[in-house]
Length: 237
Image (cartoon, rainbow, N blue to C red; front, side, top):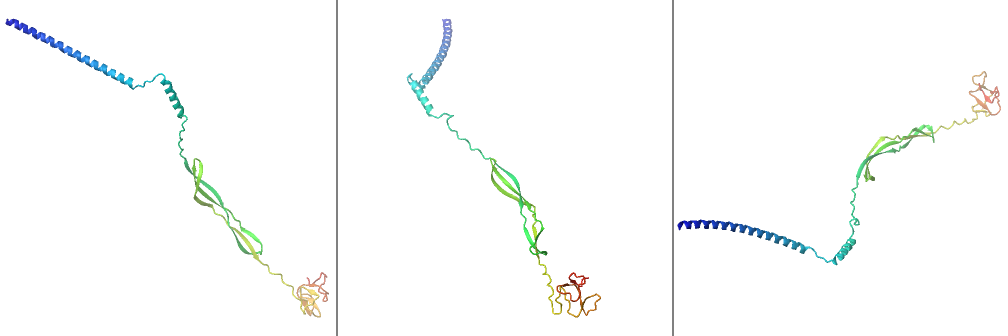
């Protein structure tokens, strides 16, 4: 009897073990089934949500929406029709140096010259123009001159003043002929022929008593015979 009970006890253990293994398999299968159900439910919910959020429009509403969309498109300016503001170009500013040659006028002065007759003028020193170099800083905006500033002024050639000599010489008047006196014979001029009983040429062979020292012009009668050759000049040698 005891042996039967042990045998029965061993079968009971084996039966219990077999029953536990079967229960474990059933639990795992059930868990898998639950997970599959949860996944399918989640997919169904997502699909329903997408379908609900999507706008449903009837076939009659589609043309109206399309027409409204095209009307709105026509009312709004296209990208090509929109005016795009152009960027203001940045001006290009440059500078350059420019040198210009300019003439310098000469001055004119005058001096008195006692060797020139009064009223006459002579250029004693010829005037010459000078030359200066003017350097400018020129500012250009986009190639167009907008400003010019003088930065250097150098005299390259100095001018030479012109000198004019002005005559101030007055010649003396010619000597007046000697006035005739009571002691000179009026028949002769340009020299005094004494009034005497006889007049001879000085340095000649005559014996006077009076002599003519020089040459006289016969204007009347040669009363003393001093014009021997008859040319109108008395005592001409």
